[in-house]
Image 1 (cartoon, rainbow, N blue to C red):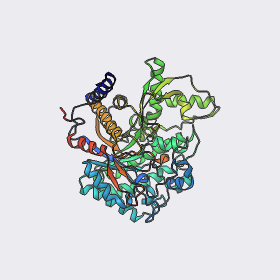
Image 2 (image 1 turned 90 degrees about the vertical axis):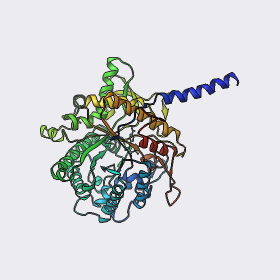
Image 3 (image 1 turned 90 degrees about the horizontal axis):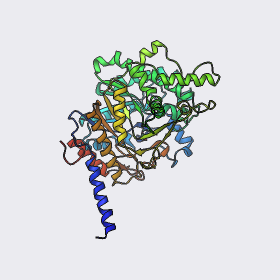
Image 4 (image 1 turned 135 degrees about the horizontal axis):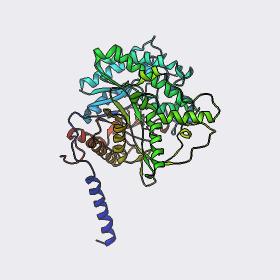
Length: 493
Ligand code: PNW
């Protein structure tokens, strides 16, 4: 063999062995939950069938298609409204212990309000839940995965306080209708995406842009809505239904650019803004101090008479604190953080309020989604930081996964799951109380502004076929093996 070729060859083998060597070889505990996830708008289709009302993603994709990279909609998506039995068969085939899906508010309550319940929508979810239970799969149900009834957006949406009672009514209807068969509830999926994307930077429906103001009002109402739903469950349903209710919060891991005091401080501030904004009021009480102080100071400098960050009364702080039975965590990636001088007073935004330099390293591998750099060690650091900072909550990872362009032979996804799960297992050895893991996603689906151009599925979906044929990818076989053996490598200790 030529020396050069030999070198390349041994590098490849060595690289491979090296990667396998680094994978944690301890088995996951028997009671650790493995599952997969989807969300209503991304998979159901049937956007106007059987009495469903219009929601903000219907409206956005129908009227502002230039915002979606391929101009597509979720009108049909994976057609799960008609093919839910097939979906459950895929979940079963993987050996998943749980399946996380979301309820479409406007499918159940077409006017948004609880006075009219759409029986066909209720039947759809009853059938889906029954199919899961019949197959020994635990349903994990999200009440709100971004699809607000359009009528409520027309009245102001999440930044307007009227929404709190509407959400609470909707939550009560869902607990009443489905609660006897559901043991795990999530009120909101990634409220930060709803509030920043929907009302500040316009990257999610309803694509409004009022940065530095509306995302804070939105979050204030989301937190109140979450707490109200949790209390309703606690007072009216827990005794008979015996389930758990929480929220799913998303964050990347933020790693300091250096170990200088300035970079460390800026990084912790970034974590508090990105994650503490939601978890602190629920797990500790009120917004993080650093958010209150900075936003108040910047608001004063802007000549405002009160802070752009709304204030909770002490009754509200107490009402929201403790409204969790576990923590739902979505995480995909990592960013570096470097301290900078505070950004000038002037244009208001969440990012100016934080004032840090956030970047991702160019030598990190990139997924199809530009924001998603593959950094497995970030998972371990994040889980350990959460455990330490927020009193060691039971953590259910409700989403983690990677995008590509849809190849059935998806080595990148196999490696992603292996390496991220390896870091989950290591964090558990470090002491983090991780109770389960949910792969995003069961199948390719409507990826919001990316339409059908970025694929996250363990199963491929043929969007050109009216049957929306599902085909297992290589990653489905790997995940199935992991669930079966509870082991990431060939054999575990
Ligand atoms: C999540 N980020 O969204 C959502 O819950 C899913 O509906 C979505 O399909 C999935 O992740 C993949 O995107 C995120 O920029 C969107 O960090 C963006 C980010 C994180 C999560």
